[in-house]
Image 1 (cartoon, helix red, strand yellow):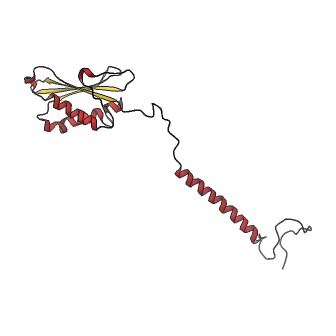
Image 2: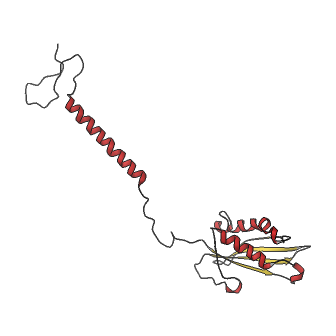
Image 3: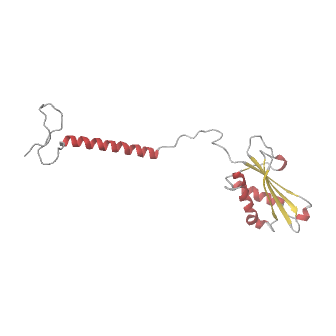
Length: 190
């Protein structure tokens, strides 16, 4: 057999011990075990860190007025223009339909005040939804408008024929309620 590697003349030298064989210099089993233990320790610590990162709770959300913002208020009014017998629609039924539709929406808060009881406070995010029954050309019509109480501007309006009966309200007035108070409606976009 031949000796592979360079041997040290000093017996107290802490160099890697030499082994006899035909291959390159090899480590003894104690050094191999320590190296593998250190490797698996680092892998284990890394895995614990990754698991902790994956299950960490998000940073605490600051509790201020901006983060706890409520949906805007919506006030509803309904009126009749012209003699009642001429346009014959049920003003209170239309108002009740929209009150129910907006109360079910998560995008607006239905305000309890109606008509002259509406009181706007500066800085409040609020809207006025008005429906007005009018005499159309041949049939009664409803004019709808949405006014921002913060700016006083009418931001949306439309006109449509009066539904034949209250049974038709969901089909004919439902799209109006969605257009105003829906997730992608006029109020959400304002």
